[in-house]
Length: 204
Image (cartoon, rainbow, N blue to C red):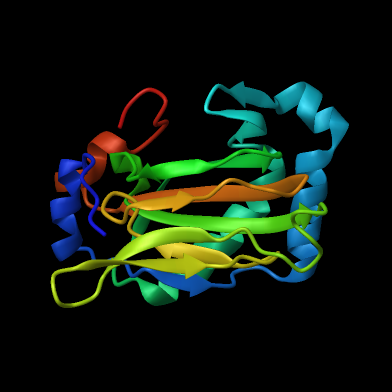
């Protein structure tokens, strides 16, 4: 399998700032459950929730304050896998619904270091209790070929990945709801990354 879409030019910097593609577990089940409850809270949905055309069943949140503690916990956790300092760019969350899917893509420059993190599910007859909605990514097999790798998330599970160079996707969601968040950073390096510091809705 080979990805033929566009890849951001900043991907050349992974040679200087390597980011592994790997499973992580940065938060425990209790923190995941609290985050999931906040995503589903009707008051938060009314006040902070947004809609996206690409995800007709989803409620979306841009930098919600109720996930600030999770962001900090994830940041602390992934430092062990990186050899450089980071600058926060942004985080985003979605409460997915039936039929939502994620088309294969790579990310913008402000997502140089990325984590996707699952908070929990509500199940259905087609997605029974204990099921997982995997995130897929293409990984270099060391022989110049890209091979799909599956990350079957349960609550508290995440994937650390180089967002600008690792194509990733999800098949159609068959459950009732899924809470997921996406956390992003760039290396602390003014030479290559200063344009991505700050709010990526304005830059990057």
